[in-house]
Image 1 (cartoon, rainbow, N blue to C red):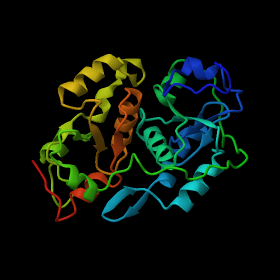
Image 2 (cartoon, rainbow, N blue to C red):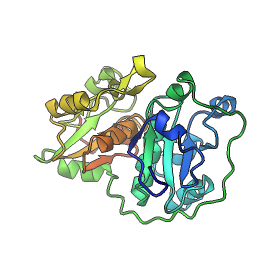
Image 3 (cartoon, rainbow, N blue to C red):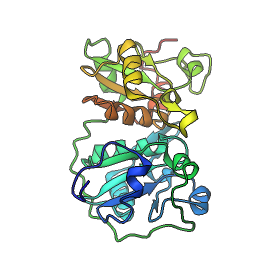
Length: 274
């Protein structure tokens, strides 16, 4: 694989270890600071997850303003031509949020490290400790049209459409309304439930399960590649991983809902099923 060749959207740790010295690749780790300081991929940059999101209580998980986002991402060394490898210590939620954010800005050269830090550590790949890399600032610009971003008004206007469906990545209790985390409980009408960790294989260090199996499971729920699929959870953290999964599976119209249920469930103009 040459330095100019795009990485696959799902990158195996064995493939990354062979390219750690590639200047075109920037490993960005969104693990908690104490975890990153203890051990991380050599040359990785630490990006605290909180810098990727904004809040307007009770709504969380919103997109920060563009100026803030560009400052944070440029500081991580991200610019045109840089291939980002996103990873975290939780199986992909934070890494998926980075992929979704960069896609929104028009930077679509992002891979998810399969299994993240857990796979990297448990499978014996090289590690270093400390503060991590301090790269030269990148020149990332905002060239995106937010094609992968949906808000409540857009979703309400699409409900019931034959080529539209929401993917609810939350727990079963949140989906059916028995677990209450907002003013109203339940789910977006017509949403299919596919809890985010269902895609992870705990016996293989949280790597993704076989892609064909998950594609069949999603299609059985009506989540098919010909439809626009909007992933949501409570704040678009868990569902950012679901968005990344859809991208990896080749869904061309995947999108995410920043704010998610913390927005939808705290409004009085949104329909709710339970």
